[in-house]
Picture 1 (spheres, helix red, strand yellow):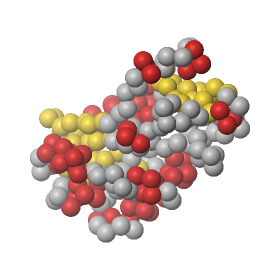
Picture 2: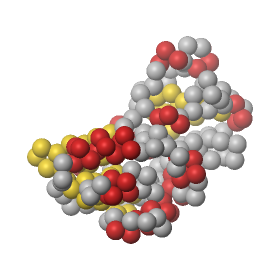
Picture 3: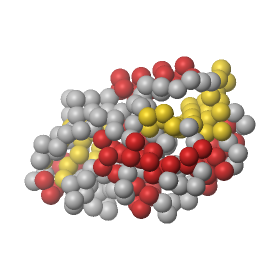
Picture 4: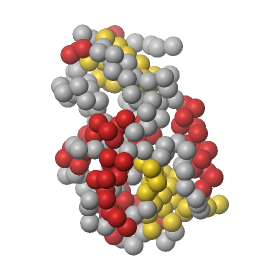
Length: 218
């Protein structure tokens, strides 16, 4: 959560906050749940689970698949637009090998648009009409088919050579059950030799070496 009360978004791992950057944006993954602490909220610990997100001010909403986009559509490109997607696009284009490609949580098209410019046939799923609206406003955005819906449900028809989910967005599915649902549904739309690529931050637990930063949650 930042100074304006917005939740820190999923995004490329190079932009994730750390305790070294800002002591008030500490997060760790423990027992399949996200535990966050904000000094600006009196140092209270809160747990995000499938039931929703609780902060010191009682804020909830992560149980709503469109919640992220509603908060971040207007600023996402400003925050991440300067990152070069070319290495990711090179990797994904090679894996696609001329087949159909699906991006879960396609968002504003940071990866999908340059991939489409390579001649890759890209489709998308996103829960946020606001995020997709930003995609549509960009050159080439209108030509990418996007289904508005929950990415865990993968509400599209395959088969796809490649399905991908980048920028830590898997953690937008807050329970192991929801993540498993996503994997199961992706399997239903993949080619027999297709691939599901995910990009996820893996916490370095050695960084949480202070008692105040290594509480156990059960």
